[in-house]
Length: 550
Ligand code: C2O
Image (tube, rainbow, N blue to C red):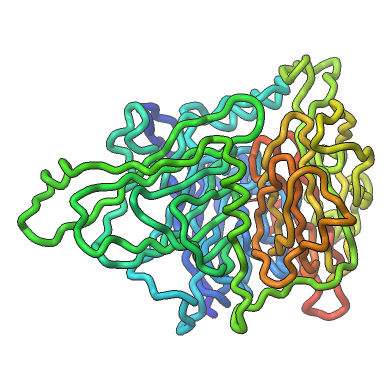
C-alpha cells in the first residue's frame, strides 16, 4: 500500500436548501464533505484543522482500526475533541477491508452536516467478485434542518422531550423536486443505455432508516457494510443509518423514452413525530443521436417508484434475511464456531423520572432516556481510551457493565413501564481474542422500535434474528454459522431480537450505540474494553503526540 494524505479544514460555510440559508460546519466548505478514496493496504494521514467554535472529532465508520484505536474518533471514548485553533492527524492503515464506508463527525449532532464517502478499492489488480462496472457512483443519504441541528438537540436535551424532526431528506446533499422551493436542487444520475453502474449507497441520515428504489429498474445487491454478499435482485432496499450497501444498476438496453425518479423515505416503527417526507433524485438516460434534443428529453414521461408503507416490518425482515456473506474460498466467512462469552442486552427506549431542576416534556412529565441493560450511558469528561492506557480509570469508568439485564421481564408482551434506568459509565472488559455472542433484545417499553446498532472496531456476523422474546433453549438451534452476513451495523428488529458473534481481536475501547442519533443522545450506547494480547501485534499502539487534550 501507499500513504495518502488529506487535509480537512473544519470551517463555516453558507448553504442554501428549501430557500433557507444557514451558516453551517463543513469540511473544506463542502456539503456533503470530500470523498476519500484509498486502496486496501493503504495508510491514511488525514489532518483535521478546527477553525470553528464547536469542538469536533471525525470517525471513520467501519474501519477496523487494528491497534490504532486513537484514530477511531468518537468524542470522549477514544479521544478528547479537537478544539478551536487545534489540529489532529488521524493515522491508520486499512487492513483486510475493501468496499464502501463513510466518515462523519462523532460529537453531539455535528454529523448532520459533517460527513462524506470513504471508498476503499481492492488492492491493485484484484477484481471485484462481480462484473466490472462501467462507472461507480456514491449516493449518500442525509437529512436537512432549516434550523441549526446543534440547537435542535440542545433544546431537546434541556426539555427531556423529542427533538424537532428534519425538514428534508437529501441525496448527495440535495432534497430534490418533491419539496417546496427545491425544484433545481436534485441529484441527477446521467447514464448510458446498456451499461452496468455500481451505486455505493450510504445512509448518513441522523434519525431514520430509509427505503430506496429506482422506478422501473432492478438492483442487484453485491455488498453490505464493505463486505461482499451473495448477489440478489430487488426493486427496493432498506438501509439504516450507519449502513452502506453496494448495488449494481443495469441500464435499459435502448434509450427508454422516459426519465425515472429514485426515491427514499423512512421506515418508522416507533412512537412520536418523524419526518415522513420523500427525497427524489433523477435517473436520466443520455441520448447520443441528434434527433432528440435536450428540451424534448425534458418532456419525456416521468416514472416514480412505489415504496413500501412506512411501518412495513415484514419488508424489513425479508430484506435482512436475504443478506448472506459470500463465504467463498477467496472471501471466507470466519464465523466464530465456539463462544467464550455470552451476553444478553436489552435495547430500548424508556423514560426516567424528572429531577427537581429539570424541565421534562417526555410522556407524563418524565424525560426520555434510552438504555442498554437499563444503563443509560453517560460520556465522561476525559477519553475512556486514555484513562485505560494510562491506568487512570478511577472515577472515569467502571469495568462492570452488566452482561445480562438486571430486571428480566416479558420484553415484548405489554411490558410494565419499567423506568429503572440508571446513568453510568460502565464498560465490558474482555481478554484479547474472546469470542463473543451477543443477543440484543428490543424491549418495547415505549412501543416496539427497530434500532440500528453499530459496533466500532469490529465486523460481526448476524447469526440469527427473530420476533418476540429470545428463547435461549430453542433459538440458537437455528443460528446460521455458515454464511451469515458480516457487517458493522444491524437493525435490532422492532419487537424482536438479533444475535451476533464477533472475535474480540482488536485491543482498545470500542463504542457500541444505536445509529439513530437521538437514541444515542438519550443514552443508548455502551463500550467494550478489549485488553492487549501477548504478542507485539496484539497490543494497542501508544497514542500519537498530537492527541488532543480535554
Ligand atoms: Cu457511525 Cu459511532 O458511529
